[in-house]
Image 1: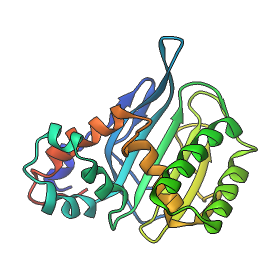
Image 2: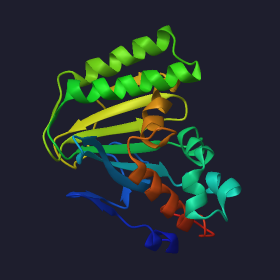
Image 3: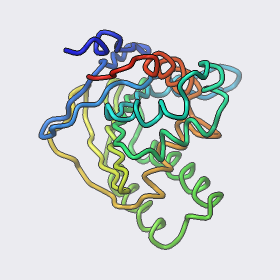
Image 4: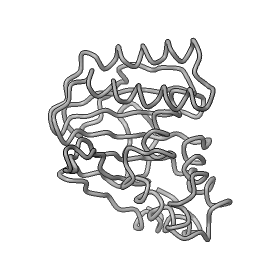
Length: 223
């Protein structure tokens, strides 16, 4: 194992353990943990935690980002929307784990996700008939799902625009994807809503900035 692997650590968010590296079943690709954090909302003056989010990336993501961002401080990375857009739109796969802290109906979860994605795509001018159809596919995939604490969703975001979904009742990654939605604006919007300009998880953004600052100091990053 290369020395860089010793620099990669897992992260615990509430009761959720995000391992340092994952390899989905039936896949030859391994992904390292870029960052993890909680998603919550202020409800009647109290911060209520709903999900834990972990963003995994292909190894080549570090080399891709290092050319532009090496030498920046964690604060500079955190404050730069371009840094996160380079992750979202980068030419490498992302594998996102969203594990529920509180019980959520699939229809309840996807309603908010789809609203956020539509708002972003409309703002970017990328929401059209194809995207409307893709949103319907997303809602259909979630409407029969139920997520008790510990259950969750695995999103695979491909650079070519494919958005693969897996559903699990625990931390186990299912062998096969439940559905693949081929729509690049939607695929990117899902991650944009998590770490973009109006993020659902500032803690995840901070984790990505802090960890990438360390990753980009490594000369030969390997997992």
